[in-house]
Image (cartoon, rainbow, N blue to C red; front, side, top):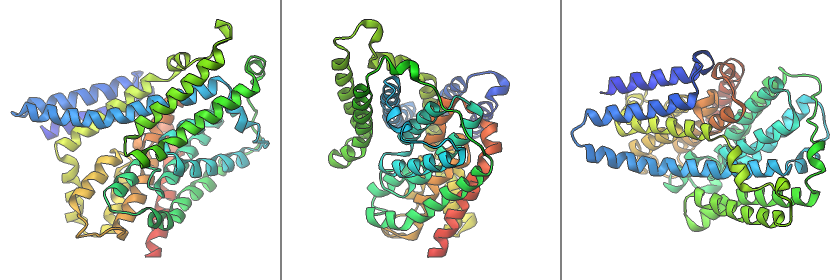
Length: 418
């Protein structure tokens, strides 16, 4: 059974990577892979009720991410529809590509630490699309945004789901993790930033949004922008105060923005109305389904205990906990970092490694930043892949190596601090 599941997962992974060659949408492949591995799992086991229960539990966790993604994408799409990002783009005066890359990277890094890497990536990729029409030059910016978002999310408890898991589990504390991981995370962003900046030169040509300017009033842009961004920033605070899942916060934020836009539209002619209903039609549902399929497939690997077996094998064969943590980070570029961190938390208790032990700190860094090495290694990468239709091999060729160099640079810097 495990062999069949591994073959199916690997084949699905390869077909997703070869999407541009096989001419089959990656979302269809991801959904088929997720469905097939779960079907194989239940057909080879006698206790079907237990497997159904496992699937329901995983689906509950996955649906939280899916609903969060839909809510965040809708808010960003609505801001974009109202040309709300003009509030930021008009503040960016430079036309120099390298300077723009630096500005966007640092904004992404710090914004990701307050929001989360997924939401930040959606916002920043959309913002980049507003700045430039040239997709070829934009993709390098998007690749750097993925790296910066993952690096920025790693050093705060609310910036990345795996850091949040370790925080809630008692493996790390807020102040300590921010102090310890800030500079390693910053280095994991700065090194790739320097390398990617060498690939670009000259000035970029800005988008011309003059047609929309005459339709949408400036005060409407500002209202939708600030309420939309406020709704996104509200989520981590909502989670900390109520302990409810983040998708509840994003849905509340979306509902507030929905009401505001309805009020803005009540006296407008039908053809001039920009509503949440329109935004829902425009969001990329195929990307959401891709995300769903990938997470279902990985959940099957977790339920069959293959991921925990992998973690145990690493522990027994390597032994060095620093190398184990770095290896798990690299593996998170292939397999979702959430089950890998969950496996590590299950393998090593707080008696073995107490709160704020270097092992947990290194796991937080590696799991948070390692996903940048491949585009489907993180939620940020998957979201950007869907929005910009980035080819897997383009990312592998242009971004993966610099992301790996940045990842290892930050890890070695952290190890030197020990």
